[in-house]
Image 1: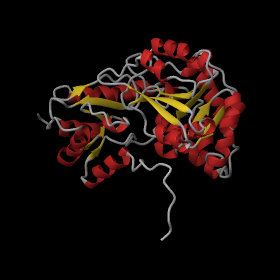
Image 2 (image 1 turned 30 degrees about the vertical axis):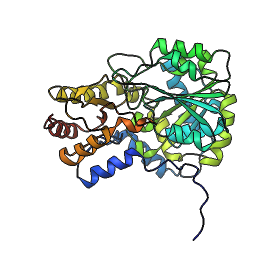
Image 3 (image 1 turned 90 degrees about the vertical axis):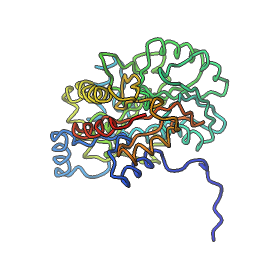
Length: 384
């Protein structure tokens, strides 16, 4: 038998999202674990895809993406955040947000470079940094408010710090960065060569009239930042795997050196369809209200239960504490919930390197009304 070399990611197994989805399928449970909508996207968008396929736009796109889509992205960013990106040289269409994150890290992180991340953290950050020889430095945000202690973050910075990865709004906590957070970040990186990778895939899902503060709104941050976003979250098409990275030309040039040997380009007819669909701003400006209604419905339905609802300022995830119900760790509780009550969730400990257990699970409310109604009915039967 062949002797395999040592694994480059020896500590990495199947993601918690796949595990919980499999458990949900095995138990015929309502899947509020993995973050995907169970409803159809707008038929108008689907018609655009059909149109461009039938018109023959089925071959390779340019490396950086179709110019029409990039122009609409640039217009959206300028209208939303008053920031200017050149469509052709500073915006790159990617095969989803995760590929953009992977490519950004691959482009700039080398052996022994240090990267600061904020936990609870999306699960692709750390393995990608380690894959390229980088060292992850973690700051743990904790329940119930998941605030950032910037003095503690400053202690993580060294002369080897190459990148800070942000996720705003944060998956899974649903928290958003405040103006004070941004100003502290500006002070932290001033006079350094630290890059910022800003994962903003939920930028258009922010609630209660609050404002998403994009990294690109601040010139002193924009010049050192790679901004990542996703059409999967924007238009309910997570399976299409189309996103983008916006960055100054000097960073984009390096990003594309890796991008061209990773996926090279992203599928042509869907890019054209998205560009056409984005010409009407209401297709994304009304997203906040659409998902706030779903969030509020879930929160109202669980208000009379023993679950404690934590603040949800953005994303389509609701964090809930269950310590009044059970003293089991969050993985065991989430498994029990799936098997016995037919509702799948994600344990928060999976978003921490040290598996921090604070008796918190994540529920996805990007679901049809009837799905949420059934989930609420099942969860209401859970008692201490």
